Structures are given as structure tokens and as C-alpha cells.
Length: 318
Image (cartoon, rainbow, N blue to C red; front, side, top):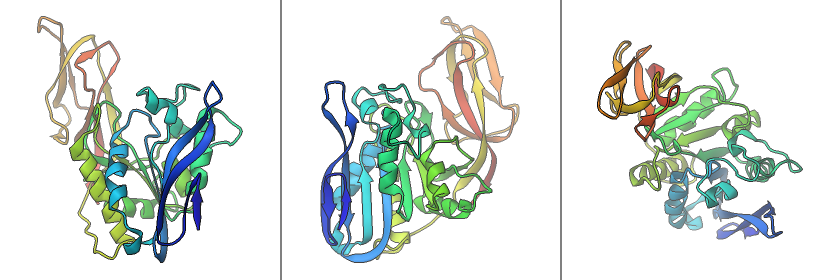
């Protein structure tokens, strides 16, 4: 029997429920939506979560599509899911948890007696701590981003190769292999000996169904590769970047991009221009290094110094 919050499932069963992580200002309990799919046969345990950044909805869309297709009669092992982690941010379409003005995915492994975000991180990490694999589903907030999977443990970490293998199996097409900030689940999981990846499923306002489908396919490929399901998995070579160059605007105005997401760029190539409202050129920004046009802001208006785009650098294939 496996229990997660109020959800409880014996082998061959499925259940959904709520994981209490605190109370709102009127004293009402805050419960995260959770699910357990407990396979009829023994096997590994997968932990999966979405929306630790409250406005990153594509992962929620992936879980909505994946869960109804999971049949414990055909499953070996178990899958634990927290469908929405940043409860408070999700309610108001906020990246951060508005209760403590914190980016929740900087608080792992959490603190049961800490802030709102730390308590949520602690409760969800308890559900993941004895898993064999972790998928932490993200997207590029409301910016434009290629579909990628992030390996955040660092290339010197003892679990680096296992995390990189999991990223390749997920198969989003691109991998960012760069050590992440302290407090990320994709850092805390490997430190506990659990291969963990951070799929970044595009970037959009609302659901991006193409990116959601990439995430659904990725989850099922993981389930096949690691023997949760009997079908064969497929893996393809991924484009890997080991670092980013980020570019801000040298002037205020309106941005025009000279490349599409995923385009190769060479050092000296024009990445974007900035004009005034009358189309008069104010600035032209070029690439500092060879790389791949990885991410960009969605809205055209920028202030001086505001983030505009990123180029993935130190590119190879894996």
C-alpha cells in the first residue's frame, strides 16, 4: 500500500487525493492535487510533478494527458504525481509563490517548519525521496523557448551520467547540461541519489499543445525505457548545450529578432535590433559566440538593460 496525502493505492490500484501543505489566511487547508498509480507487478518508482513555478502550465497539461492512460494492470512499479506544486502561484498565474514572494524551485529540499514555499518543497520532496527517478516538469514561463531538458546536477556530480541518460530518454530534442542554482529539485534529487531532470516544455501563455505532446511522449518513453511498461523505448541523439549567453537591450524601444528558435548562429551574427516607435534604428546586438538561438522574450517592448534573448553555447550532440 502506498500513501500520498489522502491518496492511497495497493498494487493494482489507482487513487487521487490532496496533500496538505498548510493553511490559507482564513484557516482553510491548502491541499495539492496528488495521484498514485500502483502497478500490479513490482518495479521502480517514478515521482513526477508540475507547476512548481505557478504560471508554467504545460507540465500540468502533460499530467492531464498522461494520467488517464496509465493502467495499473499493465504497469510494473508505481508512479506518484503532484499535479500542481505552487498552489498559491497557480491560483493567480504567478511564477512565484505570492505568500512569501519566493520562487519555490529554489527551496528544495525544503523545511517542514519554514516559509510557505519551504513547507511545500519539504512535503513534495518527502514524496520523492525514495523514488528511483524524478521528472520535474517546467516550461520557459511566458517567454519563447525551444523544447529542452535540463540536467542541473553539474558535470562532476556522481549521478551526472544517469541524469544525462534520463534526459536523452525523455527526448525533448535539446539538453541544457549546466549546473543549476541551489534549491532546485533537479539539484536536490541527485544529491539524494535519484536521477532527476527538469524538462522545459517550450514557453507560452496558456497551453502549448505541441510542447505538451512532446512531454507526453517523453513520459511514456521514460516508462518504457525503465521497464514500467513492456513496450520498447526509442532514443535519438539530442543537441546539447553546456552554457548560455544572455543578452539584454542596450536601449529602450521595440525588438525585432533576426533568428528563429533553434537556429544556429555564428559569432558576429545580428541577433536582434531595437527601433523607436517610428522604425528608426537605435541598437543592433550581435552574438558573442557560436551557438543555438535558445530563448527569447515574447513581447517586443524593452527597457534599457532588460532581458531579450539567450544563445546556447558549447554545443555538441549526445
